[in-house]
Amino acid sequence: MAMYGATIGKVAILEVEATTNQAVCACTCFLGIYNCYLFYLLKAYRRNFSNQGAGGAQPNISRHKIIHTVAPLPPYEEQQRIVAKVDQLMALCDELEAGLVQAQTDGGKLIEAVVHHVLAGCGAGEWDNSGGKLISVVVPVECHHGCKNIKIK
Image 1 (cartoon, one colour):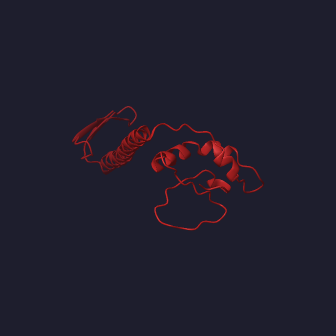
Image 2 (image 1 turned 60 degrees about the horizontal axis):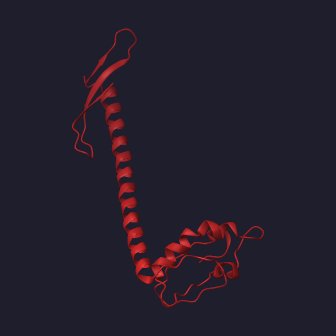
């Protein structure tokens, strides 16, 4: 766990043997503690650790505060179930985020297609003689969700 500056409370699972300096608090799991559970637990406590940071320009948290943090410790099997559920929900969040990015991309393409068709004068729109306002335009586009023609009013 990072102990200094803006990264206070940031955690990672180290899968290789390594040496660290005083800016890192290494957490070793004892028998009965699932390392992935400890990872998520410490990650959930990050704001708490960050709020405990003290010092000048680069606040830090002491090892003492970290090791004396009281945390829930369910049975090992329950820790595994919790981690599996968190992993499942995080995967769902990743899917939703990817879908949102795709929807934003599709929306941008749609706007670009509408503007192109209107400005290119493809005859797809009808104009109101009273003020030059666009009444409607049907734009043929291919978007992520398979829609073909979209009518914009």
